[in-house]
Length: 85
Image (cartoon, rainbow, N blue to C red; front, side, top):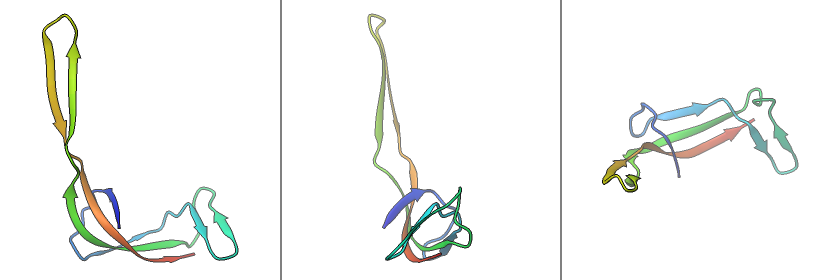
């Protein structure tokens, strides 16, 4: 399973990535310039979610100033179903 930046898809939907940078088969490695022509990666969306909270503290010494903030990034969990070159 992979967690990627949030994609606007529903659970169970299929997605196809056509910008493939590198492909390795049993005997050879293809490296794209910048992408490999005709290569595709298909995946299935498993879930949508948010990562753990990252706590941010901004502090200025000798000024009696401290600011607490937090951030939770959205993600889409996918499962790779096929790779073709």
